[in-house]
Image (cartoon, rainbow, N blue to C red; front, side, top):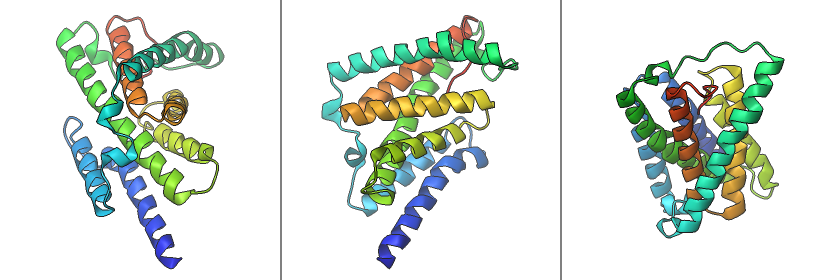
Length: 218
């Protein structure tokens, strides 16, 4: 029993590391992802596991997964564009969001940022949060509890992970985290939220480039 408690504490500590390391270690151009990705690889290997055990299964990258990923990604863009952003702007005084102003009317920067969004936002963040962290919560920390608890906590951490943005982006990230957590749980296929998240970020950045979006991305 004591060994299990120590193991759980160690897992929680590693989860905290994955959430805060990217914000407090000044590594250039998203290279923190390589460190965290490598750390997850070593942690899984120590347990005799691979990325397959947290949902990254090559055989599940199917046409159905792509179609569902594209559909759900566009659906989330529409929700943000036509429901969430207009709502917060109606009820609150929202400051202009300028983090991605550098891509406006700059095709080169747009292409570079979209590439980073696909690799980091779609692939890396989904593996870390919906793949690894949600799996740790559900199968180790809160084993035997309702999976919704693990999904909510993972999504809360995903929102906090975007604390460098404003509060409305943090709330949006929390909701997006729940959205992708539900997709991952419902279909049992991590590729669906990966594609959905990557497409959401890509379309959002293109709309920002064209000056046609409310500039919330995560």
